[in-house]
Structures are given as structure tokens and as C-alpha cells.
Length: 77
Image 1 (spheres, rainbow, N blue to C red):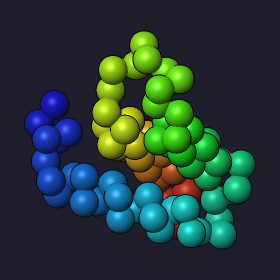
Image 2: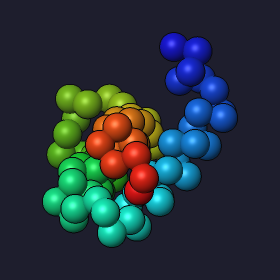
Image 3: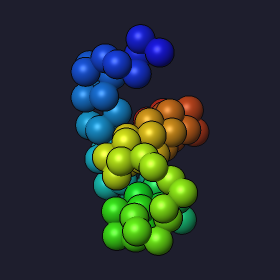
Image 4: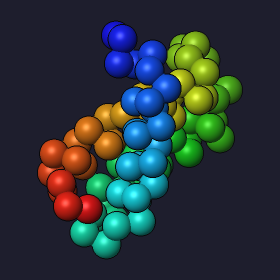
């Protein structure tokens, strides 16, 4: 929990997410697993009224999941 409240952690997550999204080593299909849900939640928040989570919180959770997964799968990317 302490890690999720750290600004250093989130700085690393968003810096790595950008690099991983631009990396040619990461397949486009995997990149879409991060981008599509985040964009859909930003564009269609009224369609999902049962999810009372802010847009940026969803994006942060997806970015944290994506970077953790990609750093394990593609450490050199």
C-alpha cells in the first residue's frame, strides 16, 4: 500500500509505460490491452455507472498493471 502512495513509484510507472508503448519489442496487441480499456473508460464513463472510480484512477491502475507485466516479460524494452 505504501508503494501505491509514492510519487516516485508513479513517476516510474508513467515513464516506463510511455517507453513500453513506443518500444518495437512489445507487440501491438499487448499495447492495445492497455490503451483500449483506458480510452474506453475516458470516453464512455456514463455508460458504466456501476463503476464509481475516477478516470485517472482507472488509467493509473491499468498503467501499473501494464508496466509490471511488461517489465517482467520484456526487461530490455
